[in-house]
Image (tube, rainbow, N blue to C red; front, side):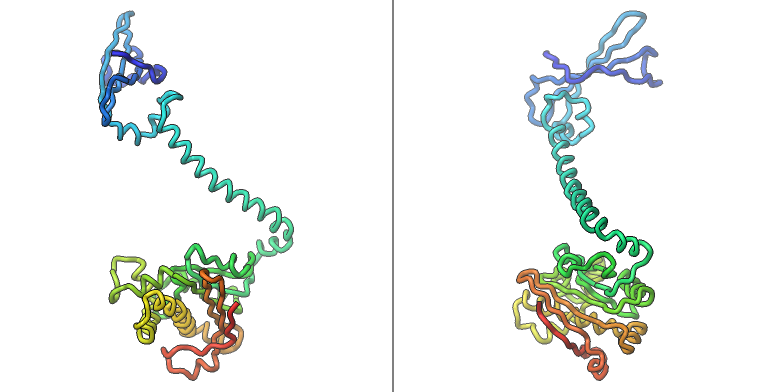
Length: 317
């Protein structure tokens, strides 16, 4: 049998279960004559020094190929010519590095062209923030408020969740409600803007959900916050294609969330006094349009609770 060395001999520590107290050396070799597609023969040759002479023991282990491919640690024992493990691991590292290299370059460009050029502004931001807007937007990666509306650092306090929903005041604590309390009562923002968008996966989940949905699903338990928008959509658009129903619900849910904001006592008080305005926005990323409207508080007050809100200053960009 031909043995082809694949690594250097290395010394193993003396464990209590070893027969000799003298150093034991271990070498490994691969048997190229093994033709099995699922296993290959790995030969372990141990060398022990006993009373001044060398004694060799050979052990043959049959190791599945699938195990060898998954055991990344074996690449430390492989020769430079051994294909597979080393090459695959290198590709993974390179892909990882490329992602963060690109991110690094974007950060350095920001630092050079924005931060350093506006150093005084960023020094003021380091001391305190005073945003004019609270933005409630969807977590969808295609809908970035700063990118599509040009918000700069310090302009907007932002919270993003699935389907840009606002839970009722009476419901339990959520990060969205915490953001509302902090931005309105501490930062004293002057505007709240809720941004919905086209092809929203959260709204699609809401519209396709049967009844109260799966109680084990975090998504279902969250999107059912918008069930009134779903009900109003079904009432007027049930004859439409599902995609069109979803589009209708995407806009309806924004208005239902705006109406729900008026159920927060400290928000309603500021809106009534004129120090806070509520706005809705809809970003259609298929046609790249943005629709914006503002809650007409005076007209909305005359409406029956739950019957919707009155809006004004509607425009499409």
